[in-house]
Image (cartoon, rainbow, N blue to C red; front, side, top):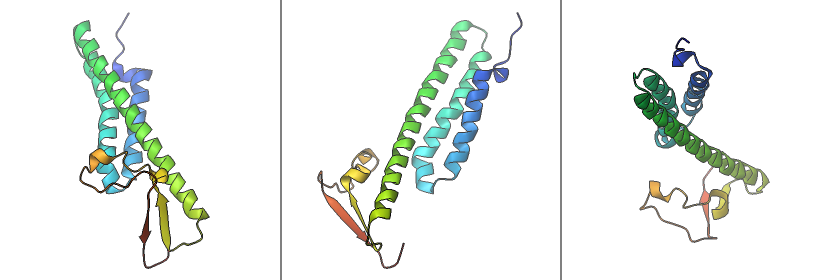
Length: 144
């Protein structure tokens, strides 16, 4: 039985395609989102394919398995990032739906429940916090 290079397997192709999609997806994000979440997501998904190929190039099964386990860990990390992205999309959709329902187009009123404030508090530990159930307003001079 001859050895099939990892780059020719369906497993590698799946993660390679996912990595391309991750790059395309994150390139469309604003700079802050790219920097905070996008880089980690792209690194994690890119790492899966790199570790699969790295493990395939090892001479011992023990070394190969070590790299394949790194690939699995990177896949789980990317999955976790994707869940955070999906959660953010749901919050954005809530904001859009709320905005469509509001009659006063000059003021954005958001409640804590829309954004679930505090879920990213580790990113800005010194930022002021709102009490549960509190709301805030952001006013601007023009139409949105």
